[in-house]
Image (tube, rainbow, N blue to C red; front, side, top):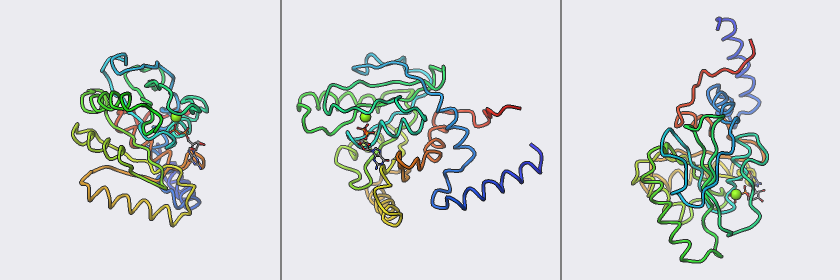
Length: 242
Ligand SMILES: Nc1nc2c(ncn2[C@@H]2O[C@H](COP(=O)(O)OP(=O)(O)O)[C@@H](O)[C@H]2O)c(=O)[nH]1
Ligand SMILES: [Mg+2]
């Protein structure tokens, strides 16, 4: 790219950033490039247990969170596909682990884990699922990172922390989304972010964290940037027409 083009690009970004000052990261070029690739996500398969999931090769990023945390909405917003992760209206029903490939590359996957925390799920089922989940987080070789979604109005509930400890044990990087950030005013959401960061420091959990709103489509590039690095997507995969 020529010098002039570069300068123009920087200028354009500056304008974009000024318009959207609170979301400076949202206009990162790398995040944008990664997001374009992530938008090519395709449904691969649904598995009732981890034994039936795709071969443990390549790289995958998993999404986890309590039921209702906004997981389906986040995946749909990120991939710009309204129905990719169906937003379940049936709380507590037996849920599947859903796998998506990035484009046709079966070696690069997104994983939508069943939501946890439904009171109506029988204890026995909950325990079984938790054992499986821990095994998956600790042992899955292809799992490159975990995106943990937690509602900004009541972040990091007991089982979220449990997940974070398992991830730490397995040496698995975690990126937290404080979801539904649009439910709070700007100042309040920033405060919630700071407070949660401090809690994580106290718990000695070295994870990254950001504000996120599927509704307002905020935080998508920031998330894509983290995921792209984990999945080792090609940041130079410019899909511009010449
Ligand atoms: N205000 C707001 N509501 C959201 C957002 N994301 C999800 N929701 C709502 O929260 C509820 C649960 O969302 P869903 O994506 O199905 O959560 P899941 O159970 O974690 O998959 C639904 O009523 C969504 O419309 C968001 O960014 N902002
Ligand atoms: Mg869902």
